[in-house]
Length: 178
Image 1: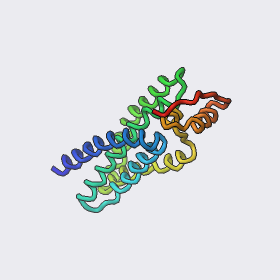
Image 2: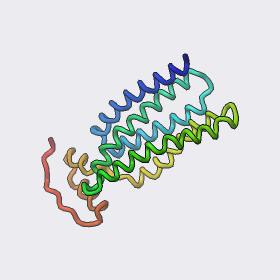
Image 3: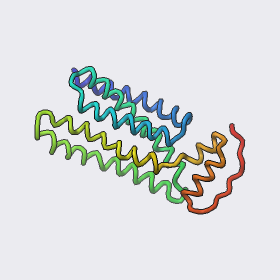
Image 4: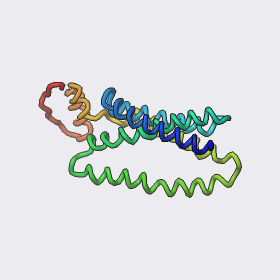
């Protein structure tokens, strides 16, 4: 019964995360939303492994679900908006394929780790906290989506990002904010 409750609340969290991710990415930007989602997922993954009773575990799984779905919802448009049209499909397929290939490897990792100790399941959840490393790099490495910047009337910033990514001067027409 508890496993069903945990899984149900996780998926409810994913539903809300999907809604929240789309809203936040349109409101505060793709970069900030992606970093926020990664932070939520990572922190609550660690919490999943550290909690000592059922209710906090249930709540941390709910929050992990929010982070997971929000991250997926934000990452897709971010990739579409940041990659050049000539190779966009290739890199989107690569990232989705990588995610799909990772699933069996996670299963193999769980099969190897779980028999080590009755509390080894905690290590599986805590390892989700490795996203904090990606978060730390993302703070410095990820750029805001030029399309999002233009949609907010921040054309000079969009030009700067494009020039940095393209490595050459870029001209953008001034656009009206809609």
